[in-house]
Image (cartoon, rainbow over all chains, first blue to last red; front, side, top):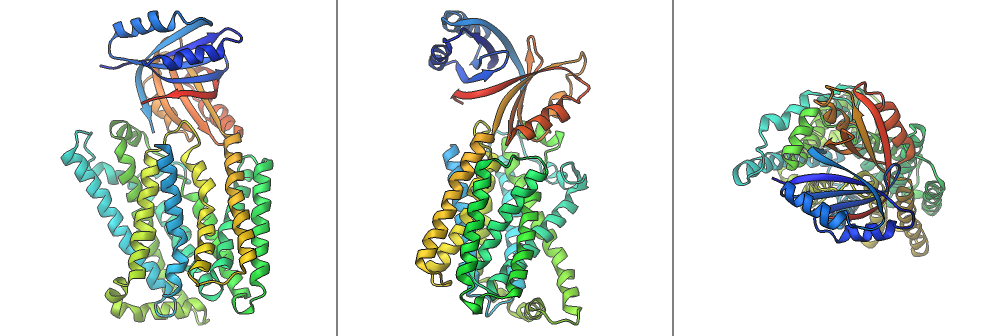
Length: 81
Length: 435
């Protein structure tokens, strides 16, 4: 079963472009938005298992230089119209 | 994908713009009431059959959630929250009669006694009226681009009137009266057609099977056509009984005599083109584009507003090209150039005013059930995600202006008693979207 999560990031001043470029390269990340507000970046990640979520986060997202703080939310259910 | 949808809107508008050229030759032989009756009655039946067929094919040949006929037609008896809380059936009747049938009656009458290019100014005037209405209703900002857009439209209308005023045969007060009524009905249609919102049940259906939107739209337009025609019958009867002879009285008289050879009229290529080429096919294209529209850039409605000017451009161009209308070539080039410029200005206006944002909501304890669908019903809300984490709900919002955004957030969402806290995150740029 697919697991989807939303990662909100705060990014260091001047590191935005680099962080966005790194996010674009990660195949598990399906959507990336640059934001204005409490967070600078929103990324939607899609994986098949919680292990994959951990792997993607620990090996691909966490090491990105320029990220100050992340706040991850797991999506329980989505609705569209 | 989005380019394909935009292309569908362009094709639909071009097909609609061919209507004046197609019907012009029919006016001397067939009543405009007969043309309207056949066009909408036959198209309504075929679009309804297509809606049922889509549901049948989905149920029989796909693994998608079944689309039961009962569910497809259920919304007709529900109330339309966006249109004075009237039942959908009454909404279809009002939209069908005033927005479609009366509009077409006066559009054809105007075409018959004036000219294509002069009648087409009705489209430009309607766009201006809708812009004024949206400004008054505080749903859209009248910025410098939209101001310039309106000025250029007014300028193009001025040139057309100036050119056509030289031809006394096609320039009459009665013709202008018809154009005004047609314009008012078209304005009403453009404002009212979008006054439609999905119920909670329908949102649940859409989330189980996205295809639901297409037969729903087809049923909506079929019923709008049918209800319009049903109301047209007593209307023409009353007009016929009024002892004042008008152009419409003659058309009604001819409509009654046309009835004896209605099958022969139906098989004429012009009528068949009107039904299939200028009604069924463009509506199908429009509905497919609408149902498959990606919410992450300009909305369907915004692109529709940008491209709606193609219809008068095409109408004037094809009228002259096929020799049905005369227009000095130098003025034609100027008018078409000005109208094409308006597409660009409208695009800039829509792009600069759009608001893309996420809302992060924290809800009160015990309020999760039903809250997401309640929010999703609001116009401007495109998707909702129920979350586990610091916040409870992520709402994706897409509005045409900050006025609309403020209204949605402050007057709608913030007023929900289940909500404790809202954080607004504006989207500066979409970096990546893959499915």
